Length: 523
Image (tube, rainbow, N blue to C red):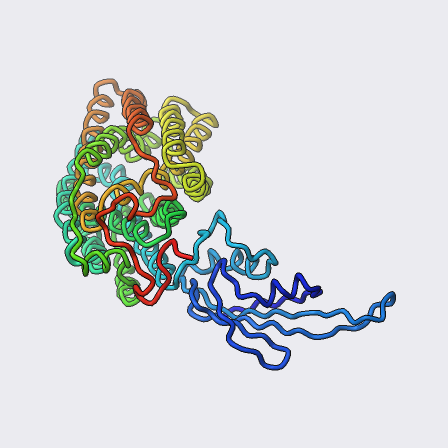
């Protein structure tokens, strides 16, 4: 429980402001008066407990006036309905609760609309599961250099293994269909549990091939998990903040990926030290059990399921997204997955050096994620997404051609820009399709995207062996993101600040009575 106390020199305007029920971060109701105490309680908002008490009293007289100066003491007792991640927002909420500005407005860190406790809890829990997925999603790419060294495999074998691992995306395609049948919540839990188990099996792999098989299954489950996490987040939030929600789950997923980087020095400590990195996900199992008790179903899925809403896929929209994903990931996957190989072989980095590079480049780049989300909600998805991809691709490609400080700067520019593009573009697979089709669309787009990744990895691996130069192989693939930029600018609609029901008229509207909460986007 947190408490915020403020004392105000209360003229009439200030008193009127203090004694009016708030309707910005939360929606209050006047709960009565006890003498000079005015009590306000929570009608709706992202809190498990909330109570605001305004005490009005007379203060001492001033030396220049015989009239008493009224003062008011405002005390807010609250507890955020944001499991685990509340420290990330605690100071921001504290300052907002103390501020005299109580007008509804868009903040860079919070939507303009009132967010329910259920929605806040869902986003927080989904973000935590995204952290698990982030760790498991990059583990094979971050460790394969060291595993291949132990198994005596060449560069092309590594690239081919990374490409083969992506065959597991077929599991994502199969399971994500059930997101439209049984809901987002149960699928999220079961995919996370399965991914943890199969990821941990990598620690026992006797060969690169067996490692690839176990991680193909784990990667397929993880890919589906990341998709359903993003789907649930964007499906639940108000229209003005879908990119912001994506930014949050992207940051939490990135945090999980960073945890792998932190553990990389283990690969150099002992022979086979990379295996320990595959054991760590087992620690997620008890946390997952606790999260399963906190995670609600999305309101939109419940309403659409009860109404038996149609789930027709608009194939023109799908083709547009699929083409963009394919050509984009042909470049991004090899550029990110083979970076450790480039740093160790071409730049002579040790495992510790790789860790330092990844952390010093990726941690500052994390700040670009909420910035990209905010700009995408304010300026628009197309402009922000296309610009960020173009700059990011140039930075990525340049970092493979340069050495020394220039390499670090180019990589930082690439990381920042690519991170900013994610919240701008990731929501399209949710926004352009009805509720009961989003799981199927997500699964199919996963298959297309992974196919693009696999093609890119195979091409780059082959070129790297032929030319004995990984950097040149990466540079050749820059045409992919540039094609993606052209498709986005020419064909993508602008979806910012449009409710999902506006974009998909066949979906049922949310009503004020749904879950006893204020409708998304309501006033």
